Length: 156
Image (cartoon, rainbow, N blue to C red; front, top):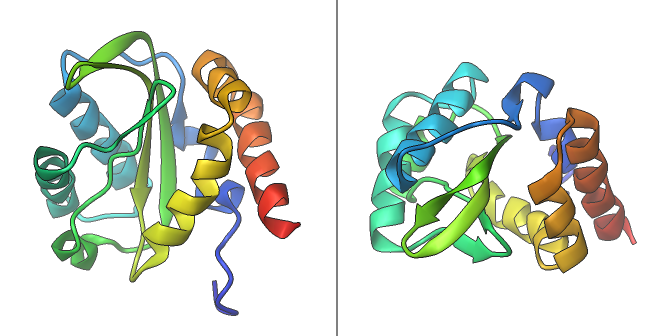
């Protein structure tokens, strides 16, 4: 991100940060799981998880098409060590404030980086076919291919 252009989504997600067969008891449980994977990736300090829960309690991160994008509050940015994405898939779904969520994409970004990441993700999530493919993904390669298609869309 040194030249001011956003990093490719695929550069921000490690293979171990994609988990495709998760289960969560609740929305908050899923957010904590997303936070834990961001923590394991070395992207955040533990306090960022609280910032994610705080954000969710003020504004839902459900974006439609069975997807939520939990991320922290502005104040939580101080807890971000590096930009990263994680993808957790919940085949059985989670009740997310009355919405059925099958995929939670966690974002950690320094500065205003989350805006660029959200805009890149939107190219995947606003396309019903791509969003469905993400909900049904069973391999890391499928997730990477969908995120790469977003990177290519942005390059055009």
